[in-house]
Image 1: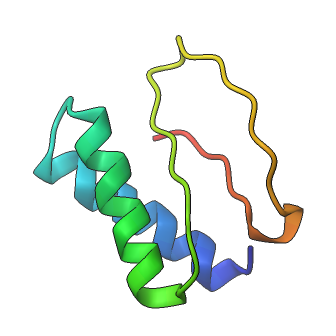
Image 2: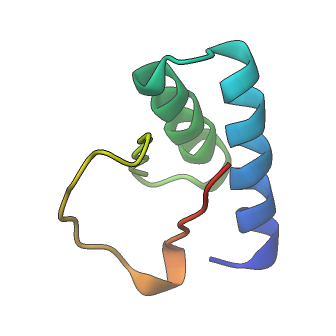
Length: 68
């Protein structure tokens, strides 16, 4: 993921957390929908408090992992 997209993802996460505090599903949907609107294609977003385990396949060029 390029720097602009990473910055956009982080800003969207901060925005979504303030709009939907504690509502992980709504936060994930907000971020995924914004990415689909801006960058086309299908995007997945996983929001966790650190207690969730998952396995996904992804394109290394279009992936970001960060904590807020």
